[in-house]
Image (cartoon, rainbow over all chains, first blue to last red; front, side):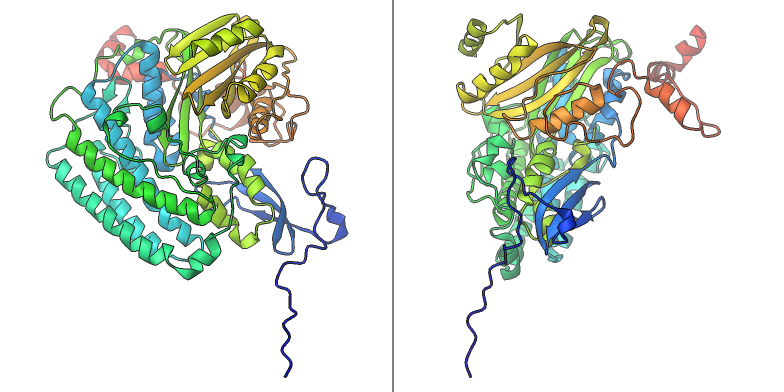
Length: 397
Length: 180
């Protein structure tokens, strides 16, 4: 029997739209070749609410638009009629899953503008909390990438280990998700007795989890088949689209604010910034897996090198009459998703004139995602969004 | 950083320089010099990473301050470029052709502050707000409390406090009662 080998597996692009003068596909919806699909605002590809307006040709995306506005809370406007200290419990809600970076950036900006320096011990405690925050985020996101492709087991394991980190947070700060631990001037409390040993045993659990997730996810043939080559970021796009953090490091850019603009006491820690090449879903996931282990190692170092004794809070003026001298600053930190910063302007009164958050998702989830989704398969949309670690709450402040 | 500030001074009308930190400097230039300066910083000086664009409303002086922050990944420094534009018929030259994400910032500023960026992609499309025909909400004259009271029905039993007064009352309840 004659075997038919002439079947061509490559997609038929004869109906594919030509690019217009603005380099975007010239789509005529009335031609009947295309269909519009709204994905979101609630779907598993993203934390929070955001929707995508997708134009499809078959199951391939030919145009994508990000729509936001589902959870705008008007925080930046609210801050204008809050005292500086009253901004604290609100600002950390700007990005729910990783709230501590908000606390740090705001506290540091207020200290810088008012000429206050946090004590040495507070700097180490802040660094500890920031790394724990990064770790709990990565414990969700790394296995979550497998979850986007239907590999749920890693998510269950990750959530278990994350709960152990949240236990540590509860012990140190009293809160599991929102901590309100870093205040202008320092932090709210010292390490509880026996915390170092308990934290170290959780870090051991993190390393065991990293090994298991390596076996289950990164060697899984289905995961590799779906993730390798999907959502590829060309290295030339990094500056063009404002790509930061693991998404840029997966494209070969060795950029990390903890190394490039060392803040707190990061210059006293011994570590290497993970860098890979070919930034696709697989590589971005892999670099976060590496980040997770680096973070666990940093937490171990911080606990070891942190001074035993010392003040953790510098004296600050009465919160009700605290007037910050006129000025402006931009304070940034490396969150698990990349550059996260606060632009704070003071007019010399007790109320901020302007506070603006710069979050990595602002560029990743709009300009970059709209570009990445073109020619992607509709089944990969959720996975591409997870791989960019999009967080709409930091877009809609 | 001083060498870059000197270069900027030699070519542009710099009215103010603020060295905030060793790795963060702000310069204030005229509004029509912003886009050429951004382009020069990106193409000739290596400030390849565009960090943010935002506005500050100085209503007392009748101006908006636009702040663009750039980062130099090699020298590891940040440069803030400030310009003032008139609040009435606020408009600014678009910089969307320099970095892809600038259009998003400009779209937000159009909606939230009413600052126009003619030619910027999708600048007139709704971004966060839907069917908004009021004052752009981030302008200082927009009173959120008054808007809420006029727009929404108050729930029975709900009270509204001045944040500062309420905090004072909670923290220093004895003194507060005496004052009253």
